Length: 180
Ligand code: HEM
View 1 (tube, helix red, strand yellow):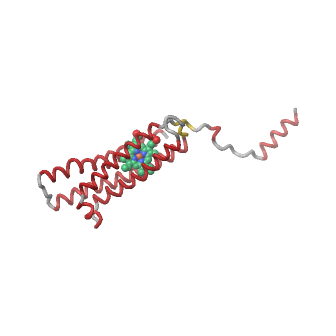
View 2 (tube, rainbow, N blue to C red; view 1 turned 30 degrees about the horizontal axis):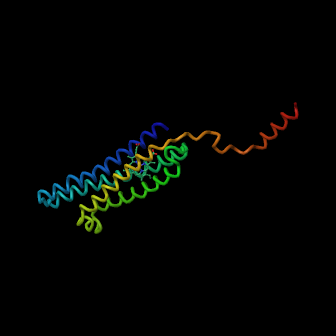
């Protein structure tokens, strides 16, 4: 189980680095460099960059989604969220917001790096959409930070459902009483 936890964590953190990092790079380095130097990249250059970024977006989104869903399932099956410092209801609300925002981030990153008609339209206002996606992606990371603050306690075996008494067990108990 420890190995699975570690693999899921690595997948999630590396996915976040790739998706958030590449979005920040595009917005804070590539776009300003293009604007400052009045540089209109050759079509082959722009196409190569788009393809490379698109591959990274697909891989990181898949990694984040799979590792996030499995990690959440495991967390919920093994632990109870303590009331302090973050109550369970708040934890779940933050998870819901993070989940929805993550989908907007996946969608915008895929659209900005894609080659559909929508991608071409979005790229006409590339700076605006990249800024929006960068802010959303950073918000998702901050929400994850809040989730990690939640205290969790292992679910005790007494809170797990007990197997129903079998006829054999009941008969055994009865015969023990009779012998006394
Ligand atoms: C833009 C997409 C996303 C980013 C940037 C992101 C980022 C992060 C980061 C940085 C962490 C902390 C990792 C650690 O310290 O181990 C985290 C935790 C987590 N993420 Fe994500 N995530 C994203 C999408 C998702 C999705 C789609 C899901 C669920 C389907 C998800 C579920 C989780 C869970 C369950 C945790 C653990 C929270 C806890 O420890 O209480 N994430 N995420």
